[in-house]
Structure formats: structure tokens, C-alpha cells
Length: 101
Length: 215
Image (tube, rainbow over all chains, first blue to last red; front, side, top):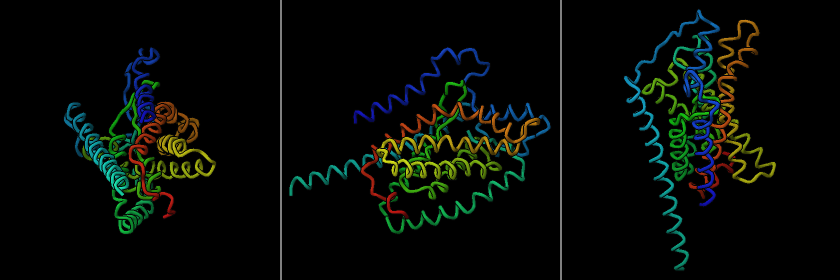
């Protein structure tokens, strides 16, 4: 278990590092998405290109968007937690059974 | 991240969609067979889908000052082989295209090809290769998830370069420019994905030896 904690802490440090590093401080649009950057690059080099389709529906505000992203993560995390607990319980039950034999 | 709605010319959009079809058909066939023969494998299936759901919802900051997100498809590729992940990844991408305006329906084919097909197949090949080369399971899983993530964004850059070649230096020049947007940003995030995939597998273990059955 200690190893898992260390791995998660390592991942968290990698995510947190850019937020405190000075190198990313002076940017015009700090931490915008790479999809927007790609779109900007296309607009720069191919100014004639017009996107020919729009999203059918867009989250009406950044709050609603973050709600939906959080919901997506919550659903996934809930399922993962259920499965991890189910396996742990089943393995524990199996060990108890072995001990009684 | 995914190619935005309307940002691939129609011919490219249709071609990438067509390229996905055989992989999706194979994925559906594998999925039904796995569920029929190993009903207990529905847990692996749910875990693989859920992991991709969580990780692709997390937009993370990177050292380049951009944000992008992990894909989460490496876990499923290691657990079940790459074919079923085409279907699971397509579901995640459809959810994001319809509800989050992230990616799009016209670019769905291209995005499925990069995230749900190229990523998992590279992950699976790396996992098998590293295992054969004598790497420990943890290291093999780490490399598989990390390189699968990088492969996804490498393919995204290639897709954009084919559609939008550099006015002077052509497709190759375009590729370099789009890789400049995606690849460097993605390196630390790919490492994060590798680490989290190892943790997920540790927590979910012991898993039945599905991945070793050759399917």
C-alpha cells in the first residue's frame, strides 16, 4: 500500500509543479487547452478555413461545464471504488474461509 | 486534447470514421465473446471504462503552460487487450462531444482513431514487448500507459498535419508544428497517466489472467 501512496504523491507533484514553476508565469493565456492552441495555429496558417460544424449543444457557462466534467469523473470514480471494494471484500472472505479450514 | 468540432475537412472526417469501423466491429465482437465466456470479466470491463471516464475528465496543467488530459485507455488495453477499448473509448468520446462540447461529432472518427484505437494498441504492444523483455509487471504497465498516451496525441498531431499542412514545408512541417502544441505538453501528463494506471492495477488486483489468454 505504501508504494501506491508514493506513486499517487509522485503523480500529484507532477501535476502541481507547473502551477508553481516561474517558467509558466508570464504567459498570455496560462493553462489554456491544447485543443484551443491547435485551433489558433490553424487559424494563423490557414486563415481561409472555416469550421463547418458547430457543437449541437454547449454547456451554457463554465460552471455548468465544470459540473458535467465533475459528474463524469464522479461516475467513473464511483464505479472504480465499488469494484475495488468488492474485490477486497471477496478476497478477505476467501482468506477467512481458508483460516477456518 | 481532442480535435474540436468542425476542425477537420469533410473528406478527412469521413475517412477517419471509415478507418475506425473495422476496429469497432472487432471490439464489439470481442466484448460479446468476453462477456459470454467469462461473465466475471464484466468487472474488468466496468473498471476499464470507468478509469477512462475519470482520467479523460481531468484536464491537467503541464510545464508548457497548456492544459491537456490523460486518456485512461491503457488500463483496459492491458487488462482485456486493445480491441474492446475501441468501443469503450468511443462511448467516452461520444459523451464528451454531446454533453461537454469537447471534441465533436464530425471529428468523432478521428478522435476515436487516436484515443480509442491507436492508444490502446500501442499500450498493448508495449505491455507485451516489455513483458517479453523481462520487465516487471509494474514497469510494463507504466510504459504501456505512458507510451499509449503519447501515441494518442502523436496521431492527433498527424491527423491535423494531414488536414492542415504547413503552407511552406507541407505535411512534415505541419506535423512538427502540431507536435509542438501537443507532444511536449503531453510528456508529464503521460507520466502521470502511467503512474495512476499502475496504482489502479495494484488496487484492482488480483485480476484474473484474462490478458494472458490470447483471446
